[in-house]
Image 1 (tube, rainbow, N blue to C red):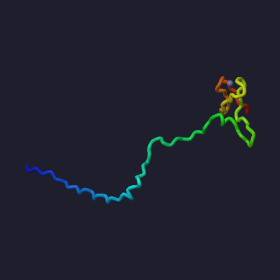
Image 2: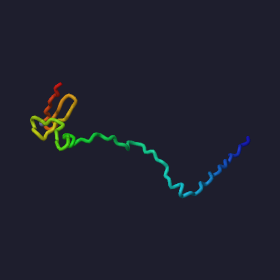
Image 3: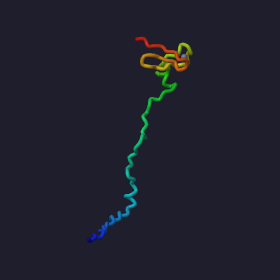
Image 4: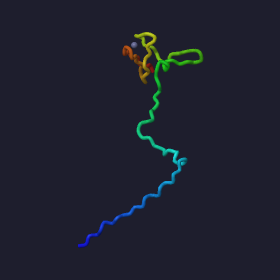
Length: 93
Ligand SMILES: [Zn+2]
């Protein structure tokens, strides 16, 4: 029974990269994973309720009949609703 001696693998060390400080200055491009990019939602706010045409301001949404002016109603596809009192008005076709 003859045992083979473990083959000592001689790995040659990779040739040392030539030191080039100028060339190494460029960082490798990192691909950022994850949800970094945010989808821009349409910003909503009071400014969305008004349309400014020239020097005239018009309201883009109806105001609530119950709450009175100042309470804009949300614009849904088939109705307007008031977020303050819950009043709903269906759009007429
Ligand atoms: Zn209301």
